[in-house]
Amino acid sequence: MSMNLTLKVWRQAGATAAGDFETYQVPGVNEDMSFLEMLDVVNEQLIGDGREPIAFDHDCREGICGSCGVVINGRPHGPLQGVTTCQLHMRNYRDGDTIVVEPWRAAAFPVIRDLVVDRSAFDRIIQAGGYITAPTGGARDANLTLIPKAVADVAMDAAACIGCGACVAACPNSAANLFTGAKITALNVLPQGQPERWARVAAMVDRMEDQFGSCTNYTECEAVCPAGISVNVIAKMNRDYLKSRFKDRRSLIRQADVADEA
Image (cartoon, rainbow, N blue to C red; front, top):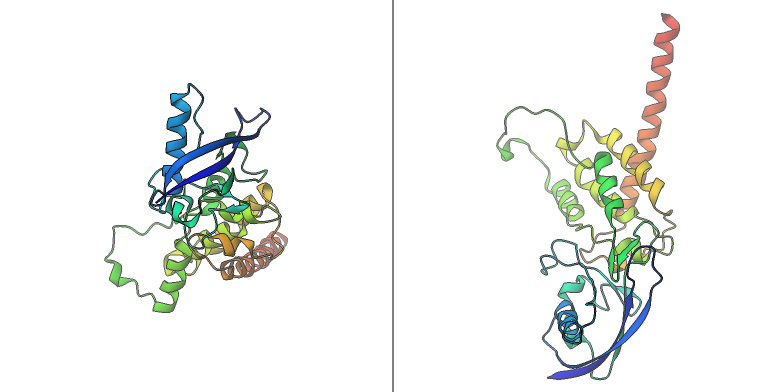
């Protein structure tokens, strides 16, 4: 079955250029196409007409990489839960529908061109502490580090985050707490993450707060997350962050006592 659709797409030539919506008539859309394949067809038409194609991010097209991501009719990744833009199929629309497509809307994600945004703010959060550097010597057999199933389940669920940015785009405050909480939780609950646990959460949260808005628990982030990340990771992050600040104060007091004794 094929459909005729009207597409309203945000077009912006560059980061400092003014943007606006352009309307395209898209005939003969196959219901089995993915949303990105539909955009490919539109771009072929634009190129054939000697016009600039629509710029949009994509890579694996399997819901793994987190590269794709646009706001479709006001909702990041479109109307379905638990899918990325590349996994959304045109069978979810009807003949004659009008579809409005925009980039992520967040100050921390400036538009590069059309539907492409700069998500390097996420990279800076990871660079602040989203890793393990504890020297462990040679590689050990994984089974030698015993991890309770409940802990492994929490870590794996948090590690499912693909960093697409839908949580930021959906949040009224453009907060990145779901992303940051997921990345912190995936490491902080595991034995391997304990040596740097408190320094990690302090550094990553401080970096996040420098670039993103504050979380006020709207939970829009959870509703649009394609990986189904729970807002529980935000609670875990906040708990660890408060503990890290307390531990810092105790460390400063000990240092002051040592200095007084000297």
